[in-house]
Image (cartoon, rainbow, N blue to C red; front, side, top):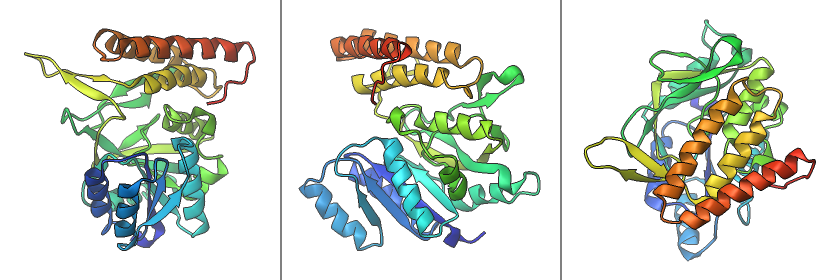
Amino acid sequence: MSRDVVAGLIVIFNPCYDKLEALIASLENEISEIVLVNNGERNLLYEQKKISLEAKGVTFVEMNGNVGVATALNVGVQRLGAAGYEYCWLFDQDSVPKMGSANTLLRNFSSQKNDDSLVAAAVPVIVDSIGQQNLPMLVEGQGRKVREVLITKRREVAAAITSGMMVKTKIWLETGGAKERYFIDFVDTEWCFRVRSAGYKIMCDPESTLFHILGDASPQKFKHSKRVLRQRPPMRTYHFIRNGFFLASEPYAPKNWRNYVIKKILKIALVGIVFGPRRLAQCSAIITATMHILRARLGADEKI
């Protein structure tokens, strides 16, 4: 397939410009257009960088505040769809793909082994830029139960992160795009579960790689151990807990999703409360998320 059929979409929120410019530089020879959706502030430094990047052909879309990654993705994909692009390559501001990944991902939509019309997205293997380790991905086994595995060969997965994901524009739009009430955490997972329940596939190709920093989490290494614990900011803790439970109530969620996400929540809560620098704020985020989950169960419409 030609590079003219795919465009890059980067959602930013007060980024580190060195990392953002490294991402843009890695995409310039891979695809024909780059659109940047700004969810953050418009300060002097941002305006200076915007002028510089626009001179290189980058298109900017201003959201005039943080409307959430889901809304920003939807606005960007709609814009690229209207421009005629068949595929959108989605990115966070803190990722860089391996050279040649665009063509590697594109081939997953036209492989003889898969019905082209059923592949909604193709994703790379994710390498943690801090820990320098391949990250496991969710796959579905018997009884619609998910588990984490390391991907060593091309295969279908149950879900993947948005960054590095190449989506078929038509399918994204026809299935309603990202669910905006989720705002940030599990936006990608919810979309994957939903489109797979409609009969589409998410393919992972290990010949493509994305070097990625996980969210806003700050790492903490321990002496005599290679293990890295990530401390999420309280806002992310709140959304992770609330959205994880909201997703469990969706009819297309895997059968064991509730148990799976509870284990993740307990780990995040433990790390935040025991090791985090803002322990009271972490406790407040956990309590607030729990209250909002209970209110939602009672019929309250908790806006995200």
